[in-house]
Image (cartoon, rainbow, N blue to C red; front, side):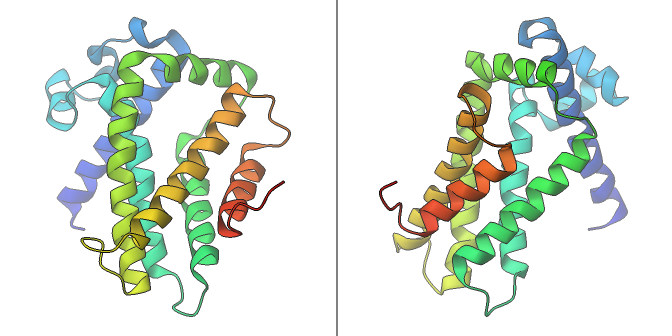
Length: 200
């Protein structure tokens, strides 16, 4: 990636994190695109060059993380079993994302994320991003397994299962009586899927 492309990617990420931060702190309906642009240190017009709405800007982190997981999966050692490689790829990118956020997870932050996730505009954009994310991961799974993402079910089933595991862990952590930290829930979810979802 050249310098120009790298700067564009940095701006996109900054806008997405600014959208998340302000929305969690103020509530979805209390944040304007102008606020997000100012938080990221760019103009309103620059925001519009990257995203069509604040909902899309927020959901971009989910899609970007999935693309990074797919790229990480492609770089895992060839001899590593598939589900082990997937789990390592997922945790490598989730850990990076948490460092990018540069914010400790506390009760107020979690409460704000819960409210953000319940907003209809965010939910719609998140589902669109999630669908695209699963497709990106399916392509990487197909490459690793020698299957054809345009013809075979297998890569789509694996990618869909990974996506479901991630969403299940997020949902239980945010909305349930989670018995463990998010990282443990996610590892458990991927482990159960890899084992074929045996009866508990």
